[in-house]
Image (cartoon, rainbow over all chains, first blue to last red):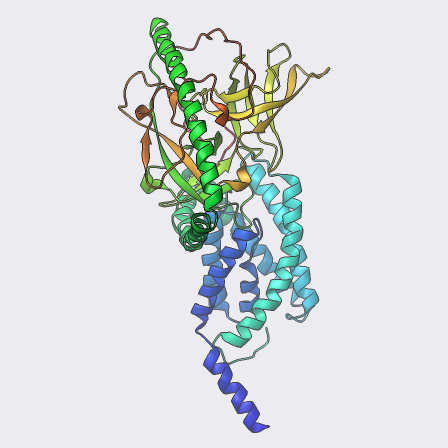
Length: 172
Length: 331
């Protein structure tokens, strides 16, 4: 039993990469995912995973990078992505009072919030710029965002636990 | 405190555009570098397939195109005569020579991206380093595709004609009826607004840019009228139009930039609608003057022999390009 545990541990260490490399790969994959599924944020689950791992500094620089990337590739004036990620983080921090942070239902609620939040945010920011987003498409993307966030979080969480180099298993 | 800081930041950026420029030159640039290799690989694979596995189709297409070139050459010869006549008439009317334009090719590397991609846009691989700035007109050999909404160093975001925020002043090619062409969303027909009830307009008539907003060159085909309805309660006709470009399959586009000091008398209606080539700049002056009116079949379904419209008195000078609000694409 002890031997098996040692073997498992050593194998994890062998496959793990530095978190910076892990998140760099995640960003590249996320950009390509956004290329194939327009209007959906594939980078957001990384922030929740980081917070769950109590990686506050990583959360901060990832959020900064994500904001610059998403604002750059978007078509609205700078500012919507700050509210977008701030809203998500607030819901996460508030929800921790009620839910265990890795609870699947909790993650799904965050996903649903993101779907609704995106609709509100796009409407609000677009109206500030005298723009009129296409409604049917926007609603579809918001629904997709809720589903994608939940599923992607599970995937990224597993990958991070398995391949990112970290030792503590602390619970957020 | 945080809210007031955010509002200050937001309004400051709306006025100056500093953060937008920063985001474009970092985020958009990075994204274009991430997507470019994949697009390059896909292009190579597609070309390999075309070159080695579809030779038969290529030969047939080659034959067909050769026949088409012959037919178009005849058309071109006739149209040159019309163009020369138009130049002479303009001189007679004291119509000042319009500005010149040049065209360069660009590749589409992505469509809408990310949660802030609320508008119907595409990402192209040319940016400010290639003299591509905001409001640069974007077209294909088939017709107008849109205009540049935001540009980074080597990438730009293009607002497509189908977006509801896209508004292009157009004129019908045959009857010279004017209107504002507006998008209705991806996959939907376009709408021509502010067409008076008594305006002459036919289904099947091609709509071309009027050049009145100072953004698009005059005479680029945009759409073809697909439906006209008369309303009892409105002062305007309800006109639907089908775009001439399939925006879902855009791969290459042409970017038109003003060429200062070009040949005088060159008509922007004679923009060279030729397939783009990589890094190739096609000066408008290099192309033979092609007329605004009857274009060859490549333009689209407009096909009725058009009655020759009376030349409309034009303003002495085209409306100067207004400085556009960087965050208001509805123009």
